[in-house]
Image (tube, rainbow, N blue to C red; front, side, top):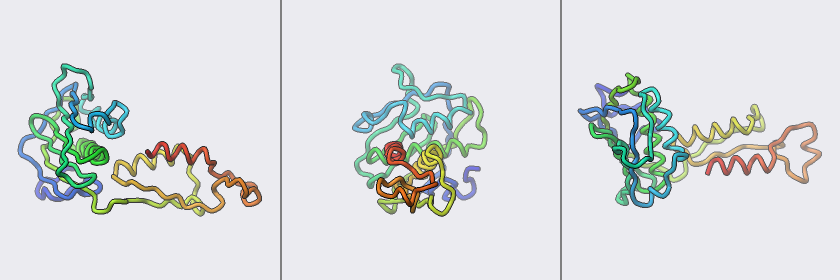
Length: 212
């Protein structure tokens, strides 16, 4: 559930630097136009991960994002240079959503928080309102990572690792370290690899490209 009595308490992950619940909610519509400006506009497409997350979170509301011209903009994304690196300012109010971001990473973090906020809305149905909120956030550390032991624990398949990377991105992590022993197909380690099914260089390149 969304915070009520204590606006500063938040279920967003990770908790933002500041969160203020606003008085007036935003009523969703069937089609929500996107308007972007500055350098961030050139980084946006229907395949942008943050927009994919938001679009998925909007489905229970009977709403979809759209880049088509002539549609009223319900999501405005703009560059704000005064914010810290990877920082963003997200405002959901009666007129829609305004996301200001320092850079591309900040934009993705802001879209991740927007998707989480939509998912936390108590009534998720067509035409429902989304509680208004003002969120300001930026990372405390430039590198935020997780380590996964694939040597002594179960070795996930590549598609599982890709899903893990996507979840880490939604939590605003930007590093993944895989602990390996005899779990990578080194060209000169055929004796060590005998009888095992190690990750191949091609798989690791595919994972790296997916993370980017």
